[in-house]
Length: 259
Ligand code: SG4
Ligand code: ZN
Image (cartoon, rainbow, N blue to C red):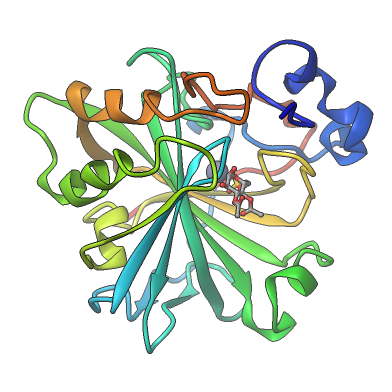
């Protein structure tokens, strides 16, 4: 199976716009989030996370060929309000981006520094009813991103997920893992964050995302990151990295909220 796009070679990021024109747009993601080029915003209220601490009935982990995706089966769908968002955004899925080694792998850079891993919690605006309708609007999606720093010790909150990865080594494989709350994938303190308008970081690169990247970081050990790199892509190769290169900012305002 030859995929339409990948992170290397002939179908790599430099070529995405030939098949997916939006990938060559003016408001693409990810970007380098440089604090000295940002505007302070004191008007945004803190985020309110609804049902993020509830234990789901189950969590499904799936190898999607270019990342690993988690969906949560739960009675009350988590949603987020506040944080400068116009209204409620419902949680859809989360997934990860990582690099060949621990020097690299986050999609967003912070003050020109790249981190080894980044998690994205993808939400769609509730008023647009479904994700497929939401991506027709410039404010259709809100993605909450957190980068990871390397810790000496394993992060115990990631143990269940990483054990599950062994069962989804090949694309389209799925496994159910023991439930954990969505809040495990947010930093402990979410009061500080960066905000800008951008795109999906994969084809079709639709410019429909209100991006949030938290200034606080999550933790992962080097041993734990290695599990992600073992996953196989559509070509049967190890998914060594799945981070899109930085995109031009093109005069977009980048906001910073501090505590
Ligand atoms: C990852 O490849 C996810 O697996 C995709 O989700 C996701 O697409 C894509 O990244 C882009 O999302 O937050 N990085 S991102 O901009 O969420 C969507 C699936 O393949 C639409 C379901
Ligand atoms: Zn992503």
